[in-house]
Structures are given as C-alpha cells and as structure tokens.
Amino acid sequence: MGRPAPRPPGVLERWFEGGLWHSRLVVLVAVLASLATALAVFYIATVDAWYLIAHLGDYASPALSAAARSDMRAESIAHVVEVIDGYLLATVLLIFALGLYELFISPLDPARGSRHFSRVLFIRNLDDLKSRLGKVVLMILIVKFFEHGIEMRFDNATDLLAFAGGIALVGLALYLSHAGEHAASNDKPRDPA
Image 1 (cartoon, rainbow, N blue to C red):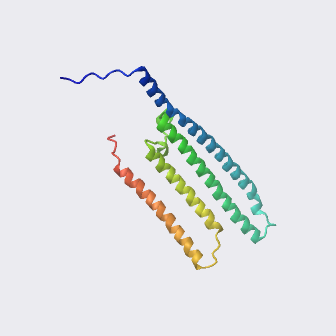
Image 2: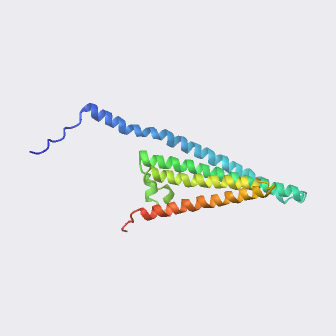
Image 3: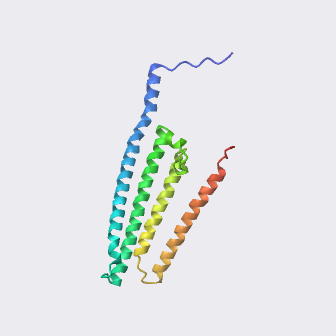
C-alpha cells in the first residue's frame, strides 16, 4: 500500500506562508539605513580629507618654527589616520548593507556579470558576512591603535614595553585572521573549472 498523496495547502496556510516569506523584506530597513549611514560617513571622511589637504600649504611656510612644524606634522598624521578610520567605517557599513541584501532579498545581478566583481562582496551566508565585517573591524582597531601610538608618550620602560606588547598583539591578530582565512579556503570544495 502506497503513501497517500500530500494534500494541497489550504488558503490560510498559503496566506500565512506567503506573509512569512515576505516578512524578510523588513531587512530592507537595515539595508537602506546602513547605506545612508555609509554615504554620510564617506561624506564626513571626504570633507575631513579636503580640509586636511587644504591646510597642508601652511606646512611649507618659512615663518613656521621647527617646533610648530613638528606639532603640525603630528597633528596632520593624526588627521590622516582619522580619515582612514572614517573610510574603513563607511566600508563596514557598505559591506553590511550589501551582504544583508544578498542574503535576505536577492543576489546583486549587475555585480555577478561584472568582471570587476569583488570577492569581498561575494557573500554566501551569515558566516561569510561576519568574516568580512570582522576583518574590516580589525583594520579599524589597528588604525585606532596606530592613532594612539602616534600620540603616546614614553615616560618609562613600562610604557615602551606595553606599546611593544600591543604591536605584538596586533601582529598576532593579523596572523590569526590570515591563517583562519587560509584554512577556510582550503576547506572549501574547489570548482572543477
């Protein structure tokens, strides 16, 4: 005796499942908010970069003393680090928006056909999204460490030792993120092409 044929879904079940499936579109709120925030941070970083470059003409002024030039140099480098930090943060928001869209709404068809398609934006699951975001966040933290390292004053050997320990930990974090990426790429099945 065979199994009975599955019964067709009822109207209420079809309506509920359709509503449940379309509820994923609420993710568009996060996508649009992340995209708008990314554009705002790109704008802020670009304005900061513009003013940094506009004020660099003062650095060559012969009226500037050596101490003032040294202070201006340190301040300019700190501003460069802030600009890099801003662009990295905007990139995190952009990757987050694109990743959420691809995971919950639809693949980005224009990107798939492009020869300029970046592997960074190729997100297959939440683990890929977390991994890519984690790497950019790690870069932001490294830039912040660099920014504080520039301003740090070494009053005794303990300060210097703490700074060296921080550099070692940054190197270890980079090594582990690269080793984890390498191990993950070896675990993935290779395309027969």
